[in-house]
Image (cartoon, rainbow, N blue to C red; front, side, top):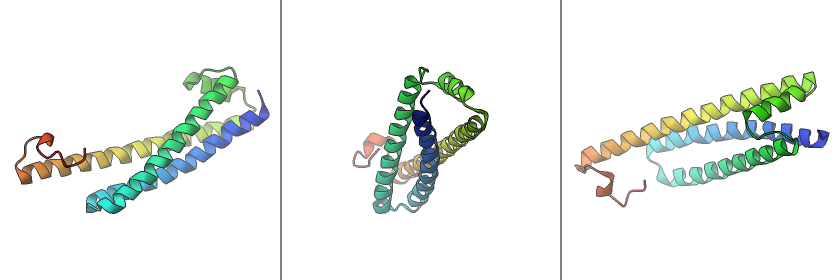
Length: 143
């Protein structure tokens, strides 16, 4: 197992923890802007969020490729095998990083769900106020 590739792998985990912190902040701002119905700033924020999510996806794909270079499957089992092969101090730190990454991803998911519920309730209110029963009744509204 190449030490350089291993450093790259762990560095990728660290960067993604930071990126997920940024994404969570953006998702919190998104919720506030949605609550305020500030579509101009919301569009800008959504672009930032999409760029960050694309970066996270690329980083994840690179780690999958690194797992394969280590001769492991690019799944949870492969990750466990990799961690188990690491020296004890590195193993502990890597486990902590993976736990933090998982936690932060769940936080982002929960924040995204919260925004989705807000959007759904806003649409229901619009339907009630306009008397339109289906979303096809107002096609000019983006879905």
